[in-house]
Image (cartoon, rainbow, N blue to C red; front, side, top):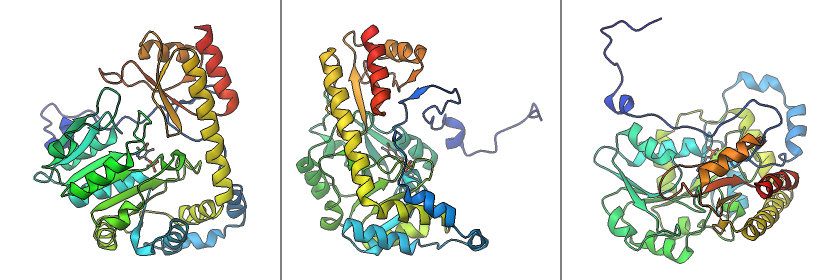
Length: 354
Ligand SMILES: *Cc1c(COP(=O)(O)O)cnc(C)c1O
């Protein structure tokens, strides 16, 4: 049905003003090598297959546990905290939405770095909260003036390892920022399972620090939609008031427990990705790429001619999909997800031919 010619928008002006978030492409073309959205190339724990085969579908008549108590207990035991320090989300994107709704509004700005995960500014726009962008240095390190620039914000988001650059900001600097910043500090650790260290301890040291994790990348479960946040119990209690009552379905809660309990499988999976990351970094450096040191499951690399877009196009023409971010700080690079060993071989063959 066409809109009548005298249609005036029903939307809040904030919504009409934005483009919305553009997720990475999920192409339907068969045979494409998909290295564009940081999914894990390996299957998830085989325990999930067993669980699904024996799942009693009669249980689906009932609502799921709104508080995810068994799952939170499992997470608390693995990560060394209490259940009341954990909040579960329908993916960590859901947790981000809960955090924006909890801590930001027109008069309570948020701050994030630049470049970083591009969903943060979109969530700010939807919430109608000002977004303070803080540029990283030329080598994608934290700028000296971060605390001064972020000062008016009630929420400071730091993605560590950062996306799309993959580098790990110094733990000392992050600790200092947490000690001095007056609002909430959110550390998005979507990629921390691939990194040398993480900031979980900071949620025990400071009651205004939140750490977010996800099963999407390191547990090979992007299709499941499960994320979890760690924070002081007062913060978790407040955010619980904001979340949808049944934000995590029953099957997801059960599958997440099975995946988390299989720590041996998880360790092998992440170790394999880290080994491939090392191989790909070394191979690209030999080809005179500028490779940002990565602690994530992707590599941000710039070809010798510093033309990220051209490399993206050439790979695409050879059925390899990576991610390109236009702009002065990022346009010289492409972001390559660490694929399987054979996918990486194909990628290197195409790059060498070019
Ligand atoms: C992938 C990603 C997320 C989202 O994780 P989901 O649990 O799949 O919603 C959040 N933050 C960053 C930085 C990510 O890369």
